[in-house]
Length: 151
Image 1: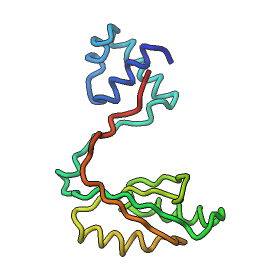
Image 2: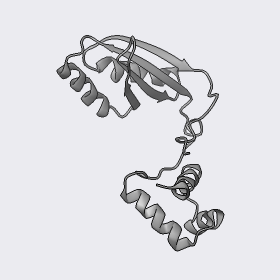
Image 3: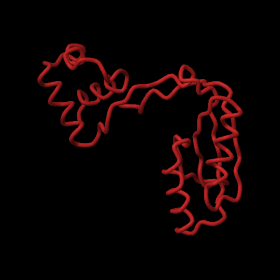
Image 4: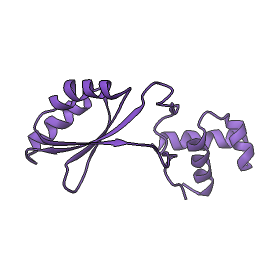
């Protein structure tokens, strides 16, 4: 990967649906050379897919919730069982194994408190081997994720 590939990646992260010809023109490349580089980045696994960024609020998802989970033990079977249950739960958007006092941090969105109550009762409280759960409500975003830093 060279500096031209880095520029292409920055452009794709910023707005992935731009025509290749526009990206090529901005970077001083021919469309065919730009297309070849993008395909090579996809083939190598640097680019793993494309997605639209949606407004959670326009979708009626007004609550952003971080849920910190502590499990009853660190046994492999406990971790694997918990992770399997999380993968099967559509209400859980993200799950990260973490260091520190808690074992995992989950990201969940909900329409309102009643919807979060449903998620808590039907999904979160049903997760296996949870010994403690701490819920943190995000009040407002300060900085939205814009992609990885590409140098």
